[in-house]
Amino acid sequence: MENENKKSEKSLFISKQIRGLRNKENRYCKKLKRLLNKESMMATIGYVPGNVSVDGEERSLFLSREIVNKIENDHGPICPENMIITVFEWEYAIVNVDNKPDRINLLKTIPESENYLVIAANRYNGFYTVTHFETESKNGNNLKRLLKRGNVVNRVSSVACTTDQDLDSSQTREVV
Image (cartoon, rainbow, N blue to C red; front, side, top):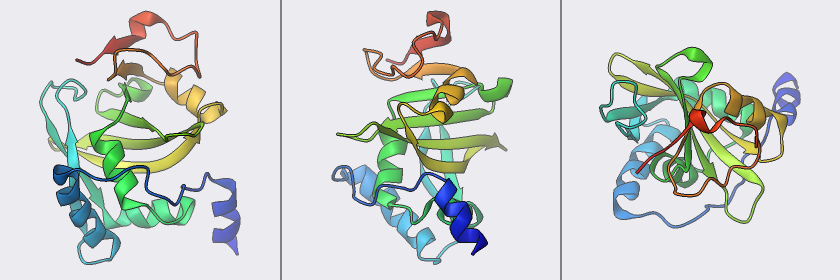
């Protein structure tokens, strides 16, 4: 009963896949599916690019079984394809979250929706580990607060994130 109440207070995932996967993404999705099926304890689900990583180096992004359990308990079943798409096709990153240079968030717009998929990760021992994955509303306060907790990196040429218009332009840098 307690888990049901907790889950209802959290944002639940959309259940359908937001687009088809590309070859490289398919390889990582297979690893993620093995993790979700409890066939492994940890999986590499992609990479954090050097322009987001605190040291400027591309770093592996890992997800552990323990975090999968936490995410699914809070938000319901993970659509593995959507998680992989977010890793490879994020539109915004928030770096230096809470003034901690090893903490990042990757955000991906859900097509035809007012929602974003958000992956949070921390850097440990030279690689990043996912700490959270959830859906946030474009108009919700959680996303607005998150945008203020670090520096926003825009991966695309036009800033489409309108949830926090008063973000200082010096906080936003474009990724080429």
